[in-house]
Image 1 (spheres, helix red, strand yellow):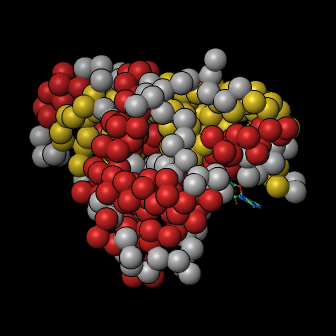
Image 2 (tube, helix red, strand yellow):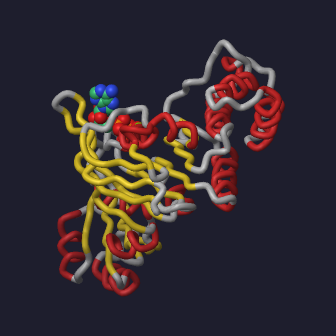
Image 3 (cartoon, rainbow, N blue to C red):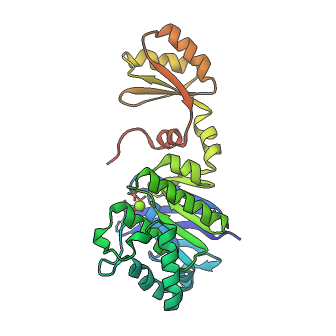
Length: 304
Ligand SMILES: Nc1ncnc2c1ncn2[C@@H]1O[C@H](COP(=O)(O)OP(=O)(O)OP(=O)(O)O)[C@@H](O)[C@H]1O
Ligand SMILES: [Mg+2]
């Protein structure tokens, strides 16, 4: 049985359709990613799964229970690290964890033990007695993730857990997420870092305007949407000529301000032909990544 199961799930804010009839199943022990541009509906979907944002219509089951009828039970079993910082500034670090533990009726002594262990897990033990305002942004993020683990949840929901973190802290979170998965937890996460999603997620969806554009394993999506490789033309001068040439040899072509991207199964061959024809234009072949998938599907222009 899936840990989360959604059918025709809808969230409407007044007239605005933030989540538009989506279907998904998240299996036990999997790391499932929500990707998509700002405003796509990732947090809204995750908040419905947490039981903090009422479902407008459709069916949503979490841990085998209907979210509309049993949100209290569900909340007791899951851990949540929201996108925004909602730490309590009136309590020092360790008490943010022990106070939170009370919601789950964890006895004080046990809560203290877990809090110390989690601070260590997130490499925050030296900050145990610090005030929240003394923490850096990255330390707050780590504390929010630590807090999400206080009830030893079977399902962990992390909304952009690594946004704003330095590379060491990001890697620490990745390590910890993998460790939790090894111990049997199911993890839902959202991220804007495509390398992170590619490395961490067993399966993911890319959302836009409240719908899924694609769903699958990162490697499969790269193969399906982009192919094995990308030929990048750097600073092309007469763009039109180059583009039509690349199209004529069967590549799928996309353009951003200073680059042309050609997607093909035969990047090396196309590059050889390209170099003969445009000897003065720099080009390079690289493996396709999830970032290419994302940009191909959602466009390379900045959105408002
Ligand atoms: N409480 C609310 N009231 C009205 N509209 C909302 C509310 N919360 C979110 N929205 C709208 O719903 C849409 C989806 O928002 P959501 O926060 O789910 O996006 P997101 O994918 O998490 O984006 P981001 O990457 O910026 O976090 C947006 O257009 C947003 O303005
Ligand atoms: Mg969000």
